[in-house]
Each structure stands twice: as C-alpha cells, then as structure tokens.
Amino acid sequence: MFVTLLKAKLHRACVTHAELDYEGSCAIDGRLLDQAGIHDYEQIEIYNITNGERLSTYAIRAEEGSRVISVNGAAAHKASPGDRIIICAYGALDENEVARHQPRLIYLDENNHIKGSRNAIPVQAA
Picture (cartoon, rainbow, N blue to C red):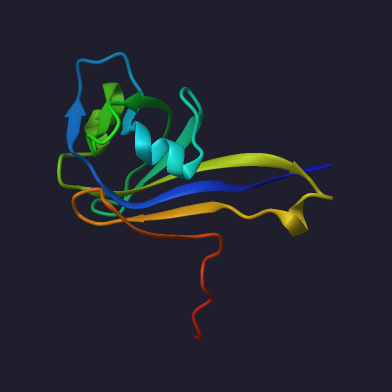
C-alpha cells in the first residue's frame, strides 16, 4: 500500500505576478525549485495565506535567481501580487519508506529569499 506524504514545501512565498492570460501553472524561481526538490511540470498545491484560497496546478521553472512566484491562468483569480502562499508537493511512498521519509521544507522571506530549511515541522505545545 502507498501513503501520500508531503515531499516539499515553499513556506510563505510572496506572489510576484498573477498572469490571467497565460496557459496555466505557477512559475517558480528555478533555484527555489531545486532547493525544494520540485520538478518542472510536477503537480503542486497552493495555499493562499492572505485570502484562504486553495488550488492545484503544476510548477514551471522561472529564471534562476529571479525570485519569481507567478500564479498563472485561471489560478490568477485566486492570488494577487503581494499575497503570501504555501506551495506544497506530495509524493506516494510505500509504507516501508514512511519512517525514513524527510520532506524538504524551505522557509522564505517577503522577497522570496531563503531564510532557512528543515526536514520536519516542529511540534508546538498546546
């Protein structure tokens, strides 16, 4: 049996563009894709912290070092420049792989510079 787990996350990315007249997808700075381990055309989920919208699309590579996060096509109705979003990719793992799995969690500042990275989300006391 396979289990779907978080593979990668770009946390609190800042939307730089929302292009309605585009074929679709989300263009992401190539360096950020590489750091997170997200592939071109890989399915991603976008969770908009600013307005609560959630959507599914695929990643495409923007210019390395550009810090671009461009939400395109119909998804542009769900995000605006300046919105803070979480971009997640998931993977299916065999149950035997679950215990060894470590996602790539990349934390960004308001200019899409990497502030830090981890392989686990810290548990907060209630």
